[in-house]
Image 1 (cartoon, rainbow, N blue to C red):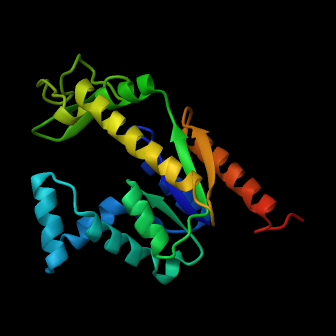
Image 2: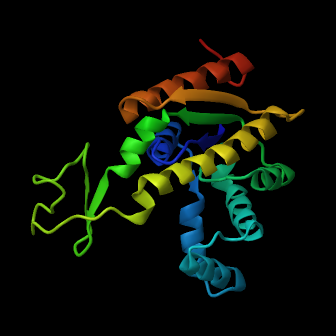
Amino acid sequence: MKIFLMGPPGSGKSTQAVLLAERLKIPRITASALLAAAAQNDSPDGHMIKESMAKGALVPDEIVNKLLISRLKEPDCTTGFVLDGFPRTVPQATALTCSGIRIDAIVELLAEEAELLRRLTGRRIHEPSGRTYHLLFNPPKNDERDDVTGEPLIQREDDREDVVRRRLALYESHAESLRRYYAEMSDDRPQHFRVDRTGKPTKISETVIRALSAHLVESGAVRTA
C-alpha cells in the first residue's frame, strides 16, 4: 500500500511513519533524509541543496520533486511505501501525480492545538552538551537547570510559542490545500483516514493498521478467509 502520512509539527508523525513501515514491511521515504544525503553529492543539485540548508531556506520544489520521485520509482517501492514529509504543498502533490505515482491512502494525524503547543514549547536544552529535556515528559530534576552541571537550560527560538503558532498555522494552510487537492481528484482518489493521535504510539499505530486493513478488504485488494 502506498501511504501519504500527514500531521502537524508535534503530532508524532515520524514515529508513526517508522511503526507503519515496520509493520507493513515497506520503506519509509522521508524528504529530510533524502535531501541530507543528496547534499553530500558533488553535483549541481547537491550544491544547491547544501547552500539552501546552510541559509535555512527551502530547497526548490524542482529539486525536491526530482529527488523524491526518483526514489519512489526504485524497485523496493513497487508494492508500497510510507511518505513522511512529502508532499508538503499542492505543486509537490501535482508533480507526484503527473509522474504516475498513485497514492492509495492518506493517513492524517489529528491533535488539538493546545496539546501541540504543550509538546513543542516544553523542550529545553543544555546548549554546551546538547542534553535535551521536556518540562512535562522528561523534566530536569531542578527547575530548568541541567541535571549534570546545574547550568541554566535554554529554549530554542523554534520552540518559542509565537514561532510554534506560526509553524502550526503554516502547516494547516498547506494541509487544507492538500486535502482539497486530493478530495477533488476525479481518478484514483486516495482513501483519507483521520486518526486521533492521543495515546501511546503503538496504540495509534494499531488504529491506523486496522483502518487500512478494513479498506483493503472493502476495496477487494485482499480477501478474508
